[in-house]
Amino acid sequence: MSANGTPVIRLEGVTKVFFTDEVETHALAGVHLDIRNGEFVSIAGPSGCGKSTLLSILGLLDSPSGGSYILNGKPAQNLNLAERARIRNREIGFIFQSFNLIGDLSVFENVELPLTYRGMGAAERKKRVQEALERVGMAHRMRHFPSQLSGGQQQRVAVARAIVGQPLILLADEPTGNLDSVNGEAVMSLLQELHRNGATICMVTHDPRFARHADRTIRLFDGHVVEEEEAGRAERDLVESGFVAEHGDRQRGTV
Image 1 (cartoon, helix red, strand yellow):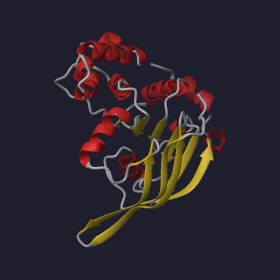
Image 2 (cartoon, helix red, strand yellow):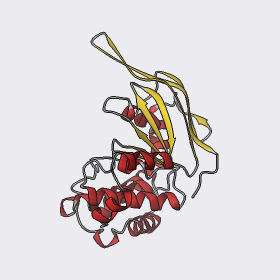
Image 3 (cartoon, helix red, strand yellow):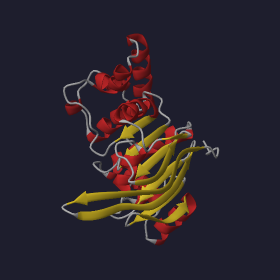
């Protein structure tokens, strides 16, 4: 699905400064960013450039030191903790590198948990969980526990948990970081399918092979946005670097 121009997220001059032992660390410095409804954006850059800090602010896990953050048309930078928790539960889906599944809960229960926090009725929860697991191809594993799944399967369950609440935006922090190339490509294919069906996705990645799946790549360096590029340019850069996408996809296969 193509982006329709409506900004789901707008950052204007966002800064983030950490203070430790009288030392100031400027993690973000005047970041301007728009993410439109239905867009797939990747955030790339070297380690320590501010990618995870930016994603934490977008996900209301942290607050900016300065600037403004507009989420779905409403100011978000000064929300209190209760308001942040409510919006995270209802409007933001998180996909983490380390899956963050709860080991003593079944697949079904892990996916159901965000809906339980909403106070949703049991019948509606069951319906939504089953639909989410079917979308990621894990309905047949709903009674299993995370320890009984492969890494790729655990990440699929994590994606189901992220989408079960029908969020406004999906935030993915290195979603392929703990996966081999085959499972990494499978998870990226799943994110692409969600995007084609209308999902708005913002993904942090250090791997250009996966960044190429996005509509647009934003590059950070020392807390600054230094470059934005469309998908076609990212593809050309990969080819020039010696990585042939079609050949690589055939070699990696699917899960």
